[in-house]
Image 1 (cartoon, helix red, strand yellow):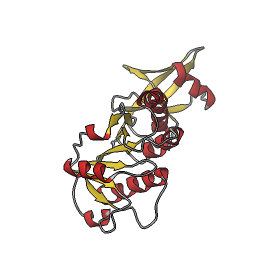
Image 2 (cartoon, rainbow, N blue to C red):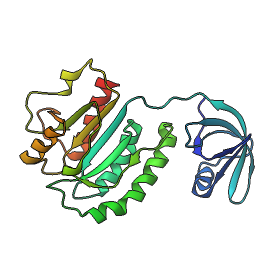
Image 3 (cartoon, rainbow, N blue to C red):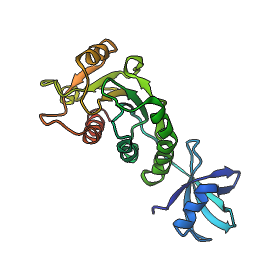
Image 4 (spheres, rainbow, N blue to C red):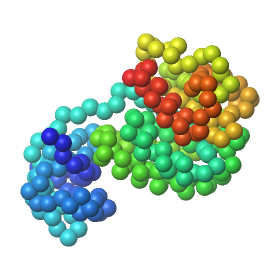
Length: 234
């Protein structure tokens, strides 16, 4: 049986939900005596029975620790920022559900927004990522780093892919059956990537791959790329 999941604190055999997360329990109309799940953000999930709902917090009794496992694939997304940062707002939840472990905002040649504008968005994106793990039942939220310039990228993946519209031959199909636990992928913004940027990315170990014959919007490219990587390597 599936129970609604919330983020809270565990102290011995007691569970507590407070602050904004407590408001979410009221929105979900959680009642005393009801069973819920609590993620403590330490890699643990507990089945809890609600004992008491106070004015500013919920108190529950821990019934058992639930056996859970997190994503095995460490998938880092280097995303060149679009001209409308609201597009990233809409991407946080689906890439979190799909298991992306880290989002690194990238400033490339065709990025028109300023670094300070991206930084103003970080807190909102982190909040969206945190809320999304309750629905998809991930153990930890998507990590979002501060923006960096494309030339400062430091990839660590066993495989590193840049999805490039001018690549006509190589696709992720060519890597089917390969083994890898850490994958880095990079998606360009509107206007794509310059040849100089592609050259510099290749020096850093990135391989150009195609997403198909059609030119995709950034949002579509991100979802397609993540799904393809998950299919091939996960």
